[in-house]
Length: 158
Image (cartoon, rainbow, N blue to C red; front, side, top):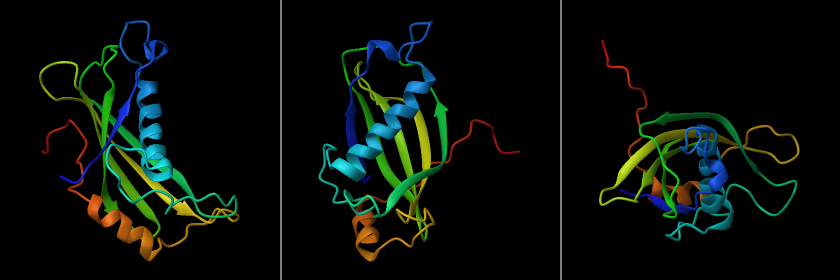
């Protein structure tokens, strides 16, 4: 599978009253992993996706979140072991990307997926904030990181 891996340090303050990592923190982990992959290029792997969807020019393209779904599968306990966010592109549109994630707890002997998520981002003009078509360079940078899209939802088909 073509996935970028981002290690996220858990913070003591990410816990809720029950001593588990709070659901709100998961949205921050997704954001941090997107920034590291698409802006900083600091995933474990060199993806080549950095700076194609947002540059240093304040009037240049911007990546805006259009929607986000998170499916919580297991409780995540605070630990000194970083959470691993596995990120890939599940769908590619004219001006949008569907970023898919699995959040993995590696504190035990097994790979434990604690949550799955999908974020739809739209690339917009930096001034008008209107969607702009993905550049050929941007599309080419995404191609190696495309993989099967997640299908979220716990309900069984009827």
